[in-house]
Image 1: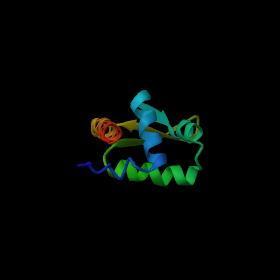
Image 2: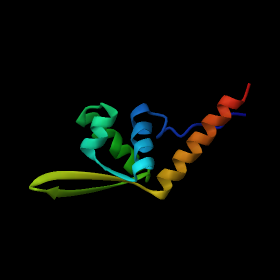
Image 3: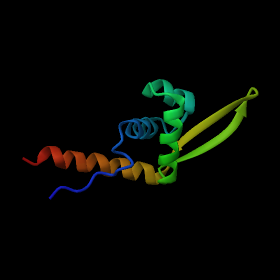
Image 4: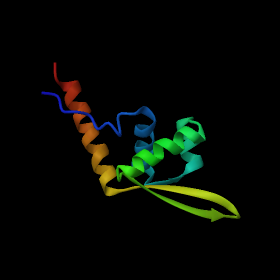
Length: 95
């Protein structure tokens, strides 16, 4: 029987953000926007959904008088991502 995929990670943009953060641990909002080729508004909404799930932490501060948003992956986010990949592999291996 197939397990359900995590609906938070099943969104293409949210999966891309979590994938990036798993590899770099933390990143600025602008880096994530550039890497995912998304709009600031859409990325902001999706990041909030990931944060609400407990998969990332968001730190807002100022750098040279400009607002800076840093996103950091949490242990729960890493675990959710690993489980998502594991389930996808099970989907592929079932015939």
